[in-house]
Amino acid sequence: MPDGLSQTFAALADPTRRAILAQLARGDANVSDLAQPFMSDMSLPAVTKHLKVLERAGLVRKTRAAQWRTCSLNPQPLKDATDWIEEYRRMWEASLDRLGDYLQELQAAQPLASEPGESERPPPTKSKTERQGKRHAGKAQ
Amino acid sequence: MPDGLSQTFAALADPTRRAILAQLARGDANVSDLAQPFMSDMSLPAVTKHLKVLERAGLVRKTRAAQWRTCSLNPQPLKDATDWIEEYRRMWEASLDRLGDYLQELQAAQPLASEPGESERPPPTKSKTERQGKRHAGKAQ
Image (tube, rainbow over all chains, first blue to last red; front, side):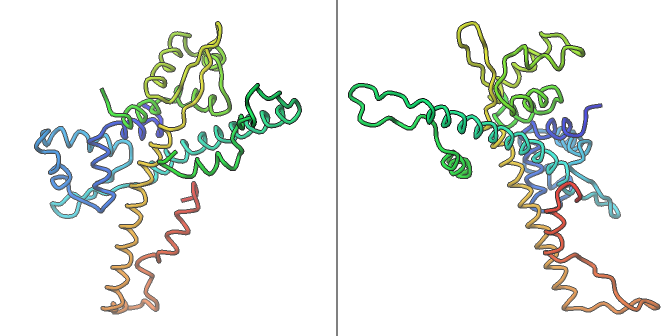
């Protein structure tokens, strides 16, 4: 039995399942509404199988009222997944910042001689602020 | 050939591969350093296989200098993964907010009669601010 995070990531590793979650993010839906966009490419049992994977991972909840079954999104596993990723992205960025600081210290301690014909030395590392600015520019990164 | 996001999520769906990424988030490492924490539970070829999955997904880059191979983390696929998740989490939260607003409007338009023996009616929905406060409390949610 895989751990919760592994189940969440495995459930997200399929475009049909991600499309189902995207649909549920807009609001609850019943199984046939959810299956409708995929019916030209796959059978209802195939869509139901994807839904079961999402349910087992705790990403989708089914409730039954009279003869109707409604599916809804459970965002907690998604939050756990982004929390995991973001923790290590932040750690990686902090380690890059430390490396940048170290290179700047090295440079300050031992200034390099200018190359012949070079009037100015290009900056060998970006400042922490520059990197952070770029990092927060999102997709443009 | 699965799409990029599916490859990223599939690569993240394993605790050994997540542990390798966590180690690389602290700084670059060579293959034997990366394998070392797992050697009591698995063989070097097994660890190498996990590393290959991470490389194929573009999460790990290998560089070679002389006889040394260094592995480093590539954070861009991780960013794409959190961007995808966060887009739908935000959409889901916006749809919850709309539902809450609608229920409050309904309640304002048609005040319910108190049940016999009930002195005060319990609040039927949480306010947008309350939900947001809870949502931002992280793990405690």
